Amino acid sequence: MARALSFADVRKAALSLPDAEEASSHGLTGFRQRGKLFLVFREKLEAIVLRASFEQRDAMIAEDPETYFTNDHYRGYPWVLARLARLNAKVLPDLLQMALLAAPPQKAARKAKRK
Image (cartoon, rainbow, N blue to C red):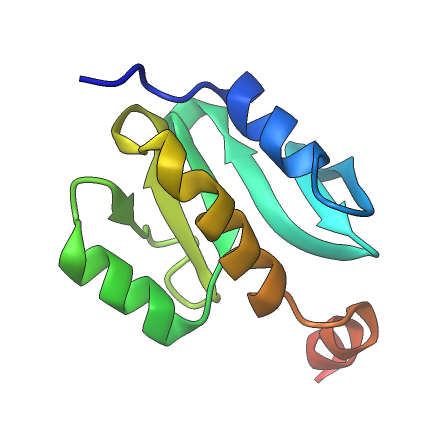
């Protein structure tokens, strides 16, 4: 079996994306591209949190509930959690691209928050 991914592996992959930067989000390690938050580390859960549409999240959980999940905190938001110990390194680039594409532009996110 392949070695489990670490937070360091995910950090390296996230920071290799164009214009990606590490930035705190509510006291957690997060990653943004051009101001758009697309990835958060939940170290106590040994999981990463990726931006995804509700449809993507539901499909991922249905297909592989041992790897992908949500919890009460994230249920109402377009994010999916992934257990690091279960993630395959080969899918990480695709997951990061999905998260980038699902992240709304910064202005749209601020407008949605105000409503």
